[in-house]
Length: 257
Image 1 (cartoon, rainbow, N blue to C red):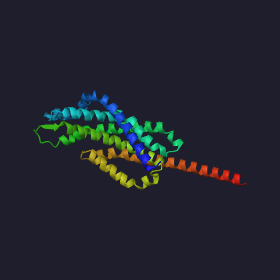
Image 2 (spheres, rainbow, N blue to C red):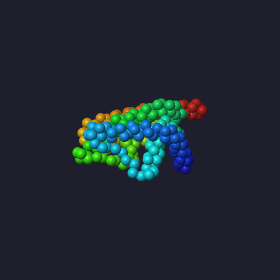
Image 3 (cartoon, rainbow, N blue to C red):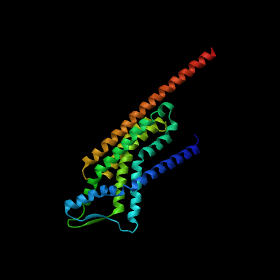
Image 4 (cartoon, one colour):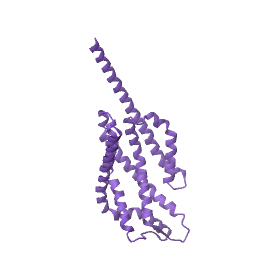
């Protein structure tokens, strides 16, 4: 496909993915109250523990409405994850052989749980992050947080972990499509490990290195697992190419004789 066709395909996939998220966000609108309760629960736990006032605050007239829209789209991203992940695969799949395209279901069955596992891991980290960050409040003082800023922090944290767990599957797709070789991923493992530790250090504001390491290890394992799966796909492709060349050579030899 020429570059213009690739760009048109990318645009169409983005439009389809956004349409799916928009539909899911409509349903997420009705889950706002429940989601808001879950995301603010760590704040009230800190307030109960310290016997202090720790509450989110909406300072503007339309702030609550604006926040409900943002939370609805956040829920839409999670609910519609199978749909927009499929659009990502559909954009990359033209570079694959017919046999590799059969793995579409496997790609989705791996990607969606991994994205969910990343969001779940972020949810485990989130209450500890709130506890640590609110711990810098001087004794005897109250903490009235800007609700949009607090909720944005929570949503970015959860989505960051979800996307981090999704990247290894994208690595496999790029390798099978021939865009990046498994050898390139392997040569870059030092930088990848460094970036993963930097990511987990930022996303886990607890001062101990144990929590950061526990968060980084599964992501590193997924990275090397993606390299291995990508390498197997490359080996299979080389074997098919060699078999096709031998068959073509044998056919040419017979025709010549």
